[in-house]
Image (cartoon, rainbow, N blue to C red; front, top):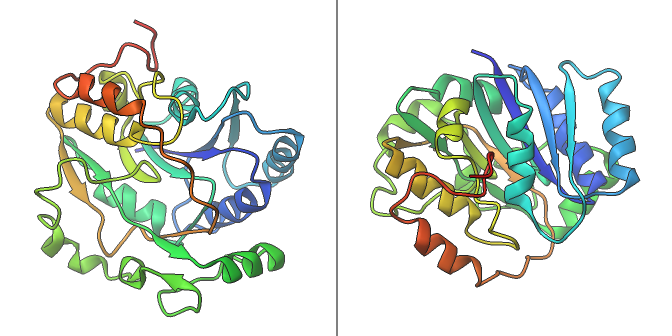
Length: 257
């Protein structure tokens, strides 16, 4: 099974550098990396070109014009050029634990999609890691918030499968994986969702409506979220989510229906 890692980014080359470093250090390197770029400038392009020279797998750069926060369309752009069977999605402000791709590969199962959690890093340690160009983090490291989410004990995952059973909308596309043909079956993300908020909830709802079950990657597929200021939530996406609650397909996704 070939695995594609899709990384969403926007004008954060210092964070993207650490993210790509963690991708290259995986025990199971993805078969391709696709940068879903929401309109970054030349600094990001040059960084991707730098890494592409000696990276252990091909890196593709799916760039779109900067017209506001359009992460949904950025991810759709990446899926349009994806050449792998299975898609793992993260954001460019993530440092992956070295087993991250191997964990998601092992969890892949027909009839399921996978979501995981994340630990957040405090501002001081984020600045330290960026300055030192370091990706070394553990659950016991200083500056780690939500330490429970960074404990790596994959043999415990089976006991957490019903942990969030009542939370139908739980999960983030910053740690999510699914088969590409399942993502295409629901037409990817709803690109009408512009601005921060609910685009990941929306695709989770439609994958469930399509008949997939959700699998939790608790105690594995560990990631560390680099600190940045919180984005402002966009309320205009809420009616779009309500409109899609009973649907599997969105109209404005990978394909424009």
